[in-house]
Image (cartoon, rainbow, N blue to C red; front, top):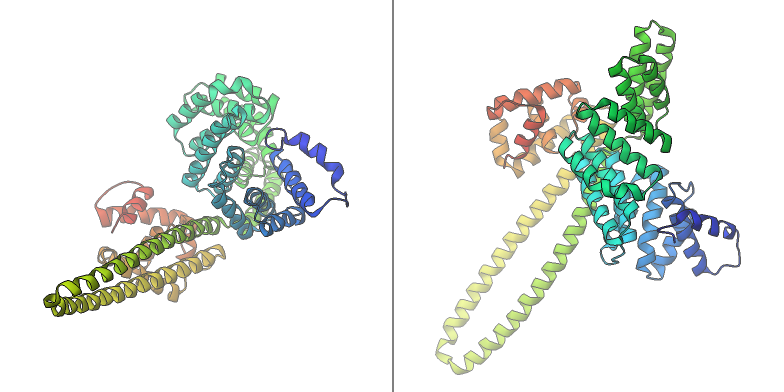
Length: 485
């Protein structure tokens, strides 16, 4: 019931909140089911004490099935408390355990949440990967509403990326499921349809879909598209009503754009008083966004978790291979002993060869270990340097000379061809290249190099021609510089 009828579960469990007669086991299960039902109903818990107690109980008793679910929902509560690091670690632990549970209903919600988290920080590639995993889980669970909701999410992401053909493809995939669903899911499908129709110039049809979606469930995205249509029609007054509504959006991007459009039109109308007031509010949004923006940290944290998981798997593989090697060595030793008894004349030569072999193998092992240790040390230094640079960018500070020199030295040590390629550039241009290779955002690069984002974009376009003899945009330069090996 908690997967398919969460609202009913909330109503059933609410009277048990103060039940002191529950056993420890029942209390742990109550905490999980109640929190899970709240989240699946579209609501959020403000306090994590209930689900935290459930997580600890299931972990102590080795109940992986319930623990994975508890970790996910504990992570959701922490995420809304803006305890981002703890939230991501909890969600990623749940993801790690999900593979062995084979529970599509849980997988769908897990991957949907992870997709939303990555969407919030603008990592669209990872967002699409998680949403597609969620779609697969919804299809395994044979749940049409979940499938349509996920198809909507994928279509919206492709719409944000400007991929019109992909948007159309997923709308067509969703169409057969629409008649069997209602509410927010149906409204989001109508908004996606309207967005596609606007891209194809069918404004009247798009407007019809948007009005229909508003009657079902008004959304920020629907209001924004409707305002865009009003602007095209010259109905500025109606567009401004939508912008007024969108200034209170929970999405900072939507709120910022709405404030900007309102200020622009109020200024044109000569209403400088209200324009000034909305400018002040816009500055508040910018300040709050700066204080709570940790997009790079979230992506880096997820990447580190995945990398550590990969390393653990590789470690287990190495252990298995070493065991096999030891076994083979034992067999070889027995064979040698048997051979010595039968071929005395070859004993001296064999012993000499074996000694030389062991010496060579020892030297090779030492060389390999030395190389691996150097690689690990360089990798650790690189991660620490990149982390410090992200922290400096988030604080609005330029790059320190020590960090800049260390980033350059480590990068050139890992990739000697890069040093040769960048040798003709000045120090600032080299720093732009190195920060781009390490996936810094243009805004971060601008902060670290004491420039503007537009100047950084212009520099990347210029460097594309200077280094590679090609013409194109800043993204083309990013792709080219990252492919230098």
